[in-house]
Image 1 (cartoon, rainbow, N blue to C red):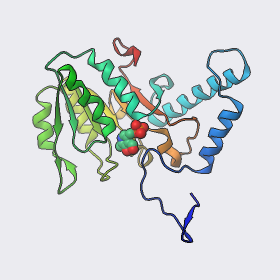
Image 2 (cartoon, protein in one colour; image 1 turned 180 degrees about the vertical axis):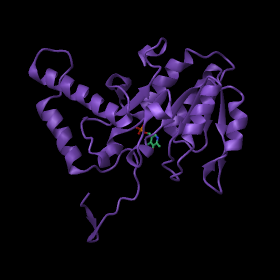
Image 3 (tube, protein in one colour; image 1 turned 90 degrees about the vertical axis):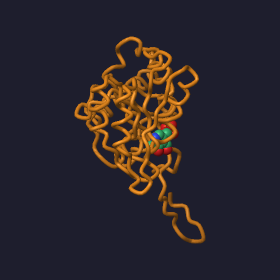
Image 4 (cartoon, rainbow, N blue to C red; image 1 turned 90 degrees about the horizontal axis):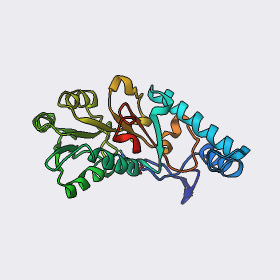
Length: 238
Ligand SMILES: Cc1ncc(COP(=O)(O)O)c(C=O)c1O
């Protein structure tokens, strides 16, 4: 991050998933590969250290989100986890069922749901008001009345910075019996998240985005998901 161009330090104004990380992240990743990096479940020290590190990390993130450690799941990245989630939730849907996504969301919370159209699922999109850069909540109210099975929305937009009315969206989605999937990748580094208070079924995040929170444990980009529902069939495989 101290790199210079023409004698000037670079100001990194963007925050995409893959970007420069502080030295403490690099050191933690190095430490993992040097001292651990084993399959879990074996009875030797590196395996035990790996298991303990993952366990501790889940507990830290549970604390961060105000949920239990075993409600936290790691995966390759946010988008991959969301594809797995969409596949699992697909088992609860039949042709003609609906999913509601938004025009303000990142592709990571759109692509997994849009691909369900190949399986006969209808996907509605909440419109973006381009003047205010906010979701058109009138459009949301109209489309939620179509009783979607899943509502997928981002907490805050990485594109324009808008913080969406996620509490209202989750409440109204639950009123029609929908699962809620909140993408908190962008929001997590900027504001507190309390999943119990938010009451969402699923919340997706990105740990490397959390460098400001001093959470530097995992060797690869990881995501985590909070869910009250994931332990119940057919979601156990997620
Ligand atoms: C708001 C938001 N959601 C989702 C993603 C996708 O995250 P990942 O790269 O972990 O799939 C990003 C990545 O930049 C993002 O900014």
